[in-house]
Length: 89
Image 1 (cartoon, rainbow, N blue to C red):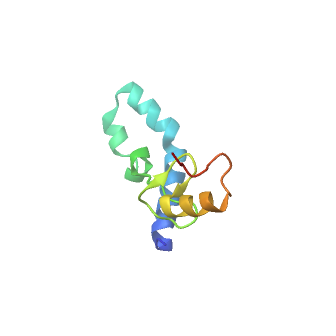
Image 2 (cartoon, rainbow, N blue to C red; image 1 turned 90 degrees about the vertical axis):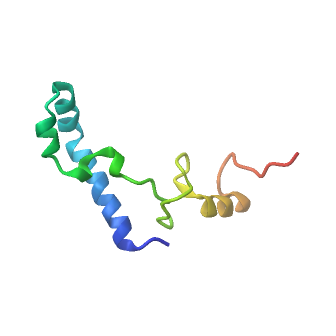
Image 3 (cartoon, rainbow, N blue to C red; image 1 turned 135 degrees about the vertical axis):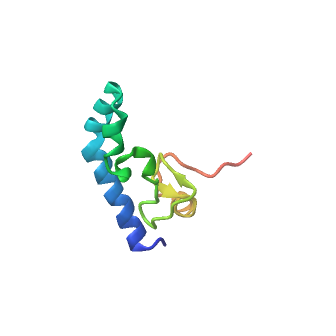
């Protein structure tokens, strides 16, 4: 499980991205890179990390489900993910 501070930091970044999205897009279209540079760094969408919604794990996260591979496998085997079943051939 990821540290709570890491998860909180990522949530803060998500809020900043949402807050500055319109302004950032406007500045990019205008080509005003000097004003763009003055915006907070964490307001850039590339700074947000996709994390598992249950554990906060930052690697191997399936975007479609919002789960890391461990939780995905656990829920898939328990039958808690609709439309997902173990492959057999």
